[in-house]
Amino acid sequence: MSLQKEISKRRTFGIISHPDAGKTTLTEKLLLFGGAIQEAGAVKSNKIKKGATSDFMEIERQRGISVATSVLAFNYKNKKINILDTPGHKDFAEDTFRTLTAVDSVIVVIDVAKGVEEQTEKLVEVCRMRNIPMIVFINKLDREGKDAFDLLDEVEQKLGLKVTPLSFPIGMGYDFKGIYNIWEKNINLFSGDSRKNIEETIAFDDAENPELENIIGESHADSLRENLELAYEVYPNFDRDAYLKGELQPVFFGSALNNFGVRELLDCFIDLAPSPRAKESDTRLVNPNEEAFSGFVFKIHANMDPKHRDRLAFIKIVSGTFERNKPYLHVRNNKKLKFSSPNAFFAEKKEIVDISYAGDIVGLHDTGNFKIGDTLTQGEIMRFKGIPSFSPEHFRYINNADPMKSKQLEKGIDQLMDEGVAQLFTLELNGRKIIGTVGALQYEVIQYRLEHEYGAKCTYENFPVYKACWVEADDPKNEEYSEFLRVKQKFLAKDKKGQLVFLADSHFSIDMTKQKYPSVKLHYVSEYK
Ligand code: G4P
Image (tube, rainbow, N blue to C red; front, side):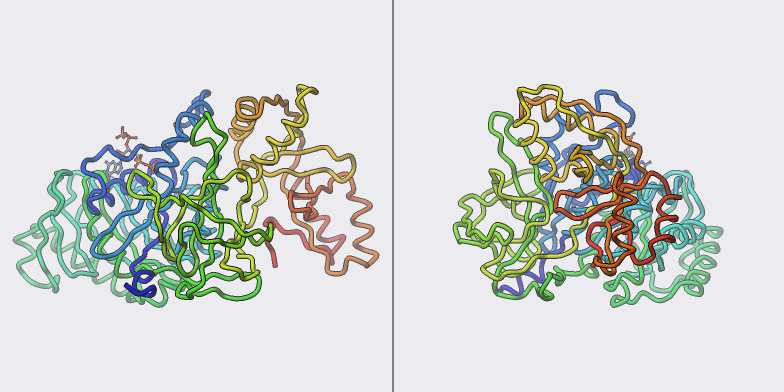
């Protein structure tokens, strides 16, 4: 099969949601439809239960599971589907942000009763910034929840999206009758039986048809007609180009647990969702159909086997094909590397493959060569953009608690940062090291892993920082910049790449700094150019 054909078959996407909205359940049902698993319950949730003090032990235990669920691939209707797992727990949001750099589209799951929740807002914002095409799935229609129009409003307002429903619910909760599929023009009747893979679907291209009363009863028929009329009036027609540009988001309703509305979502998804998209590098836009291979590391998974300190680097193939035993250029190290056992991922297992295509993810065994964001090519010198670091939420000094093991500590910190577990900042003034994380849980993880993997011990000390701001000077030689450097000396640090960062202790201090030094730009994201 030609390269182009193979690539156009691929759909690489992520499912994002606030914890408990139903991401795991939906993933599982999609796999069931793809025939990739045989029974429900096969996909282990790698979710971390809220508030458990032993959370980090749980992470350890689940690390094996989460590598298995990092990429779930299956074939469906002649399409190759790659679902990239995105941790729902907010302390691992950074991991999710990075995974979103490797998807070509996303499905956003929202709980019909809870509506738009905090974590959904953050994740959607990242997708919106990158114009990632999004489909919204409103879940748990078998339960009482918010009115459909209110929810659509909420999605538009809180998430800053422009939506158009492609299906519409008939009733809700105990009175849930089914869904009118605007896209396929049929009615899907709800039986409440999750074991059924295909529910009863009745073609119905005109809701005015008097037959409707016989099927869902008079009052439901009336309100469906009213709702559809209003929906057609208020929302724009679906326009695929607008969806692909990230300007319009289609919405579906259903119940993942009951396997209801999931087939419709999947069928529509494979029609609408984009095949692998082009990606910007520092020199040019790289097209997936180019013959020459290129790709980048978006995730590093450590310790698959506790006996060996091995890591698996996840590469998203941006263009061409990745072949086993072929030499590729590791651009940052300017070194050619060959991989004898690249892993491809299937529903619940990984396998060595000879060839993978743009859109696919390969896992490469790594002994410490890779960092998040590294680019691999067939020889071309370029670096893919778009794997920024975001300002952490928590900051602490890290101290060495065992002076005999300072080398081990350094190495451990270095490698954990390469994996993207947290961010390291080194204070300009005295060289002290500060660890920045998205969630407090990360500190326990780091401490635990330093001890168990590197034999090093650390303690933490609070360091009151509100946000890390990456500093960009309009003119590094001007007087204003020199003054900024002098006055703020105590709060300046370097990140791991050597970029200058201002560790602001309050929102007020950021505002004041911006006012006082207008030629110094402060960014909450490391990649601002
Ligand atoms: P997450 O990955 O987004 O965190 O959510 P997950 O799929 O684990 O679902 C969270 C809870 O919501 C689960 O219940 C799940 O069974 C339930 N759920 C998912 N989809 C639906 C749906 O369509 N209708 C209803 N009524 N419930 C749904 P749990 O009690 O937390 O877990 P479990 O013991 O059932 O696994």
